[in-house]
Figure 1 (cartoon, rainbow, N blue to C red):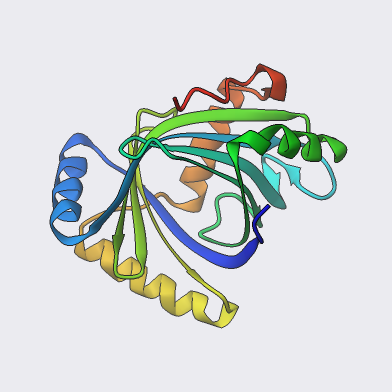
Figure 2: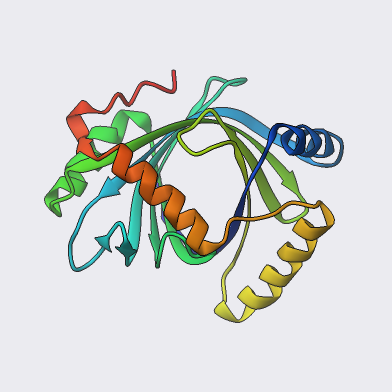
Length: 208
């Protein structure tokens, strides 16, 4: 298994109506580098304990992300742990890559800690790189079409300046973002409408 990487992720998300999505796609095709087009399954690990908290008052978020590159047909798998409230725009993140062949070992590892259920979320995403930003357009998921823009820093002292730069870029592109409150409300509704299921009931091959 590859070595894990720990960073502080700075991320903003915002809604995309058809016109804004068309304009953003056009801009990124001209100005940014296409990183890939993917089918993605994210399994958010549902729990309610002293370490992770619960979905409404999360202390840490755990998820399995499985990405299938539509062009290369390659699959990328990661176990992600983010520390802090899920609606926060800046959280410490630990990423542990693994191969799809080892996914049952990952699930068995989680079961040791009493984590036996997950909330599967499928969507189509297209990723671009622009300067030090990764910008994703996410479609066909339970959350309405939206964008995500992210970067990362290693020191907490750099968070404020990076967030300021990101906000200025979003303003220039006339893109609005979800507030922490509005994003949390949307996600909680999705969790309530689509409750967690046992790992064994999740179709992990849906990205294919």
